Length: 450
Image: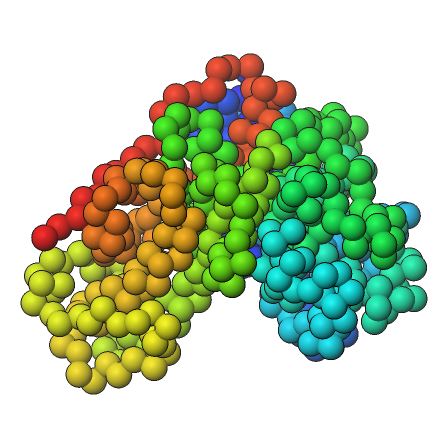
């Protein structure tokens, strides 16, 4: 019996860890999703349990390698950014994987920016707003300053996707998509590491950069497997669109963060854009991608819990509420200043029912989303916007987004698991003997209503 050749993709999100098997037409043959409870670091702050994550990957590899009817031709990894795994020369993990939400010491940040030209100048050069632990390069600086004995034991500091890849390859490498993810490490003007990396001798623990679209030889218990280098998840989600869409476009990738990615905005970041939390990513081909972000996923989760409790509805009741133009036309939803919107302070007693309350919440959220998205659209003339991720399946969100951008063609992208598919596509030619299938990205158009 001939076996189906597949690629295995591990997508390690902040909340959900997913495993997929794709055939050569990128159809999902197998998938699973788990959640791994966080553990506490030495300061009592919760973060990723890297040991349990490694154990899950190892056990999952054993399972899929033993599956009947499939042959694992290749493996690749995607994961969230701003997260470093510290290993010694024996590839033993030496420190916690510190949470990017952990507060960064103000005094240490002031010391760092004063030393390297000031916060504004540094942020412009590295296309990285000053975000504390979300700048993973500053995590290295912190470890070196606050735990020097531990830092001396570190042979490599690997971003999470590359650490996961190393479990199969045994190789320590760096990747452009992780380096370019608001790390504070990369000088976008020089297209090389920033001066501070060398001045602090941080380069000694940074592995050599390897192309994101070229795999390495991997091995699993005497089986040779083509193994990708690992990709930052937001950059991976962009790949299917870059390979299949020929016209200029903006991708709004929704989830915990709703990230507006514009691969066609080549203007350098300005001081004003940085102050609004704009940044640049590096795509898998090494080119800058201007982006803005809005932290809407947790706000949505918080609000549906509040709605559920107040109106005595199931937690997932919002999924059964379709867009109602009548609610919008009959309601006096004010165009409030987005700075005044506080999702956790809504008074629900004066709102007529769950549906109106949910429409109101999404209406206000779109005001902020539109403001963030327009920051990276300025001057580009782009007329197409694609939305993927969780909110792309929300008709209220999509319709109100189309209303906010009447001058654009707004589409919900019907592409299940764009991050995982993009991670597989990055090494397509190395494992897949068929041509890249057309029509991977399905589209559903939304038009502004009056």
